Image 1 (cartoon, rainbow, N blue to C red):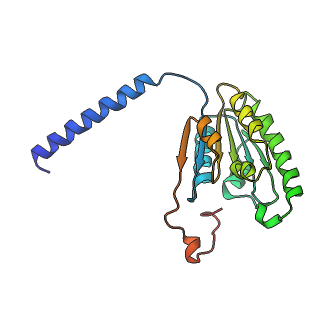
Image 2: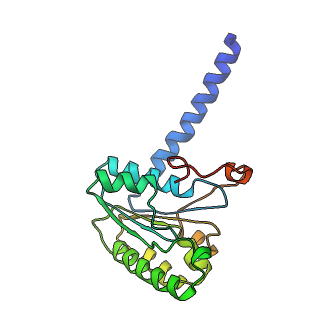
Image 3: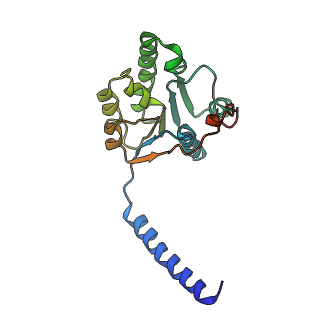
Length: 201
């Protein structure tokens, strides 16, 4: 790279640093945040668990409730249950709703999972609560949307909450501090590749 290009690059980086530094200076509020990770792409739960591992790295207490997951635990959950005392975990454990095809049984399981979620959202000792795939519970009317929104609003002030799942409702998105949408561009499963342990679950 010639000298002129290097100088222009350095000037761009200086301007970028000034913008970043100004943003850091402005962001001084300390509180828990509400994060929604939605969209049709792969990686929503993976992203939430990445944040959970980050919190554990700082010695934080964490809680996880997994909705629509089956009885077979994912690799993340298996590892966490084996290696960390700082995890409180509950799984709805009925499998995907399109497998059970039993609204009453799913509703009962959803209510039980929500009770665990509600208790976590009241517990100031939990720094992070992950409600994995909860969006489906609202989409199919297993849970009352207003109850969920109120519990998130009234949680302890330093507690961060992550909700994952497709088709997050406008009300969840409006309440959230941070919303990420993961797009589905390509997926190996659509090309006939079987889901693999350690990669897909």
